[in-house]
Length: 211
Image (tube, rainbow, N blue to C red; front, side, top):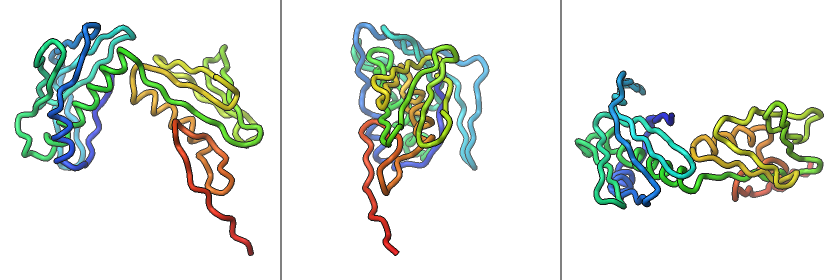
């Protein structure tokens, strides 16, 4: 289940995103339900109650998203769904309007087409391999020993080349989070450009200081 995190953002932008309809195809089912035991999420003085659930089913699987009680998701027509909030003048509702809409749209894309992330290993001897027995992605990035992480359920990892890894899954947050965790083994460094790059990531190289 995908959680919702509170964060500050530009309300005007998020309200614009929130009002945009979500396009679905005939292979997609959206099911709404009430959460039996609603959950309160707090951050500082702000809180909200996650009281409803949105299940999105497609050819690749099903994703669920708990939503606040002030958010409504409804069918506009057979190909479009819309997200609304009770009072868009309230800061938290304005922010969550865009957030919920974006997460639901990501889930629609995920259950139909999936999400991907690519990892590129740059550096002499840098490489990746999969430990099939332990279901772990192992990386050699400048240290004498391999570093590794277990491949989460719902994620597929393919080593296209020793220096190129493809991560696939229906949950965009899960895919990008796993890619970010692998990147932490050796983030790109600014002098020689060695490291693990995610997707189209680039860095600006710095000139070495000469003493």
